[in-house]
Length: 266
Image (cartoon, rainbow, N blue to C red; front, top):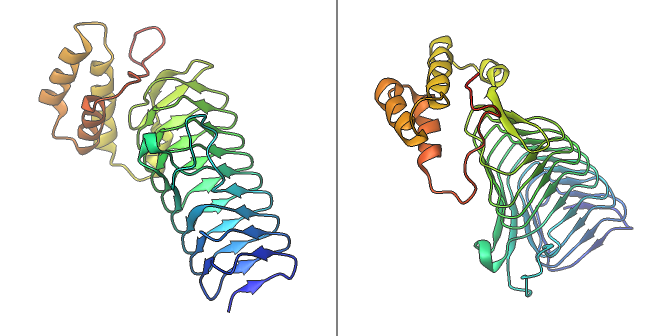
């Protein structure tokens, strides 16, 4: 039987696993589903059609599932789906999707959302993502597995952040960030590869060496970007991490690619 504090307000229609814990002054709406072992510590509000997966911990004053901050939203039925074993710290906000983005905002598993971070409507986040304090995603942003968004950073709508990428604190990201890339700046530019992240996640030394060579060729001065992508594919395309970058770069996007500030590869 769920452990519900007497001051919490839980709609009888909400779907709660038997071992859910709902702390003081939480408010849970009728379309909410809470998985096994979910713990809402106190003063958490969960609204709309929101699903929170097994083992998530949600800290005070988080607001999950209230209608999007999008003037085009007309009350359409949409969802916020949060995966398993996420930590959602104080004052985090997450909004459901809209008709213009597939009607769903999705968060993967094992993510950490630090104080005051924001996930806007129609965002799609992978697993093991970290958003530091007050990091902000605009609508329709894609963040792939193991990416880190530094504190006080802002990501423009429709931008894609590749897997294992690192966005430095206080960055303003207006263009796509390649997988394994590291960006920084108030209008962010590519600083190089996220070498620390690659080593921490156990990438082979040879693959890291190949990635560095591929990176230098991709962002060299000679030829067009399309020509350099083709050259990298021919020379380094059999290296799986390089293949991930090339696939990302060849996917259609409305935002263009974040590149080195001075046009030179690091």
